[in-house]
Each structure stands twice: as structure tokens, then as C-alpha cells.
Length: 163
Length: 153
Image 1 (tube, each protein chain N blue to C red):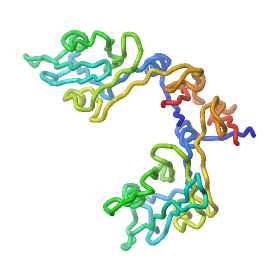
Image 2: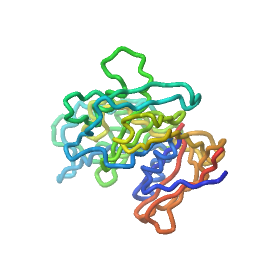
Image 3: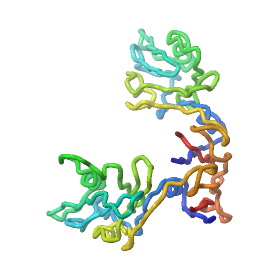
Image 4: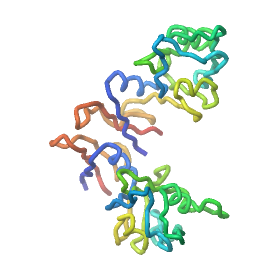
């Protein structure tokens, strides 16, 4: 099946075809921190075997002062605790205060469960979100056939083939 | 994985797609010279060779001096260094493997290369193997530059 992906800029397009999940709200406040995460979770399953849990991060911020992007990633990566670190393959970046969850080395995509109680904070939605990594044009689907500017010349679209 | 490379002009497109690397710091001062390079190194691993800059008088090295020291005393005749708007650019004379610069050179900071290895890639055309272009060179929507979809590995 042929479909299109639309992105406001090429950085977003690159993350989109590499399996990023985009937040739908400005999660970072004017203090540079994300508030309201204490005790809330991001729940990941294995995108290759969707029924299999991969790991859960439960954010810790008892004082409620908020977490910086660096602190959020440290908690996802479970820095300072004994391994294994199943979620160390992921990271959250922020552009224009909006979260973007991506594999550090895009490999299999991400399966973020809708049961994640921290999802509304980031604007990731309440349903399961599964992303894929797109292959080049001569690979197997999902694959990117091309990336072009839109006719309005204000953004970009990718023509893709989905499985 | 796929990546989108963005460029300000077509000269830069050709430079990067052919494995060139560029420093991130505009180094030429108002006197046309770079100061503080004496005894400092740029360590290339592809092609292999180390240049140790010599400026014993401390008066600074011109762009021509730096180029001569890289290809001369550094023994890196396989490299074609140059300057663009005051930034050091280095590419192979015949693009083959891409230029690789170690992060440990003591002159890295002076040219804005940082402490991590800098790796240039020579991209194949779309029908080749990675690293390769995955499409042609396109004009950015804002008509202010170019982009190329690539498969780095």
C-alpha cells in the first residue's frame, strides 16, 4: 500500500522515517523542566514481538520540581542502577519544548503502550503507538520511495510503501 | 537507517558526498593567520598520517602554510586541504574511503573538530551499496539550500 508522510521540516522527516514518536503538546515548561511525572510510567513492549514486555520506566520526582530532559533520559536509561538496561536504546529529545521519543540507533522501531501513565504529560496519546523504520526505495516495505517539498513549499512529504 | 543531509550550496553537497570533513570553527583572524598551532597535531587515520604544526616564532600560520604543512610535513599527499570562508576543509585528492580524523589531535579544538572521531563517507549512487544516496539532490522547500536522502550504513 502506498501512503505519504508529512513533516514540517527535514529534521522531523528524518526522525519520522526512523521510527520516532512525537509528542502532541509542549511538555517542557518555561523553567526548562517537565512537571507532573512523579510516579508515572512509560511502558514499552518489544516491537518485534508485540506481546512481550520490554521494560517500564517509572519517573521519580518526589519533590515535584520537575525533571530536565537530561534527568528524564537518565531515568529511562536507569543510570546509576544495576543492569540490565533494556530501555537504554531509547532517548527523548525536545524541539520547541515538544517531546520526541526515538531509538538512539534506529533498528526496530518503538512500541509504546497506551497504558503508559506518563504519555499524556508528553502528549504521546492514550493508545498503543507502534512505529517502524523505513527501508530505502529498493528495500522491502516499509520503505521510502522519495522525499519532496510540498506544493506550498512550506514542508515536506515522503512517499512510502507500507507492508 | 536513512538520514537526510542538508546543505547550503551545491559545492558543499559534492564535498560531503565525496567524504570531505570540515572544521566547525572559523579560524582565520584579521591578520589572515591562525595563532597558537605550534606543536599541535591533527591525526588522520584515513589516509593515515599525523601533522604536527610548526610555528616556532608564534607569528601564526597562513592558510597556505597550514595546507603546506598538512600535505608536506604531515606526509598526507592523499589529502586536499583547503579553506572555505575561514573554515578548514579536508577531502581526499581522489575520493575513495572518506577522510577520518581522530578525536585526539591537539589541534582539533583550534579548527573546531571536537574530541570525537570525525568520519567522512564516500557515498555511492542510488544503485550502489551503503553508504549511498537514496535519491537525487533536491531543493529545500524554502529554496535556500539542498538536501539528499542517504543510507549511511
